[in-house]
Length: 168
Image (cartoon, rainbow, N blue to C red; front, side, top):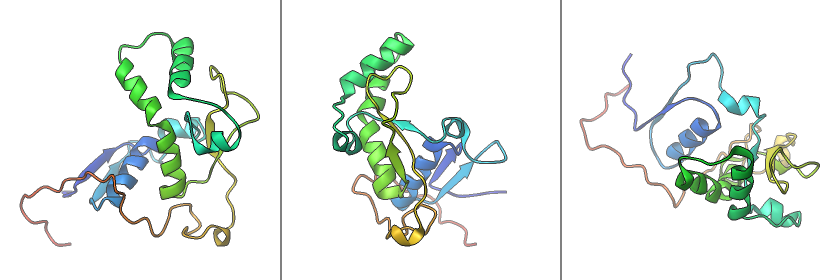
């Protein structure tokens, strides 16, 4: 089998699927390869929950959080890291990521306020919400994915200028 794609995503966990959606929404031809018989990766073990600092959902709940506080919590629980720049980047983009999942991808997520996740000093775990009926969510097809995503202003996919693709 031969395939000509702009972006090949290895793994269908949350990060792989998010990368595939973002690339697709930027106009790329995308393929995903998964070694298991179903999608999910580690995200299936975490029930799809995403910790994020400084989201609008936290602000709406009156929770004061920040990148610095999240990094401090992670360092206190996990100890020193060999990649502090990567840790900071991950935390700095966490709120934008959760809000992108909700606003652009159509993920139904809610801030968990009933408890603080292990090692977190404030509630910052955003988890899948119970699905509403498709009729109550304009712009979704019932599965959560927006049917009218448009192109993000942050798209940076570069198409190769190689040989033309074979027609299917």
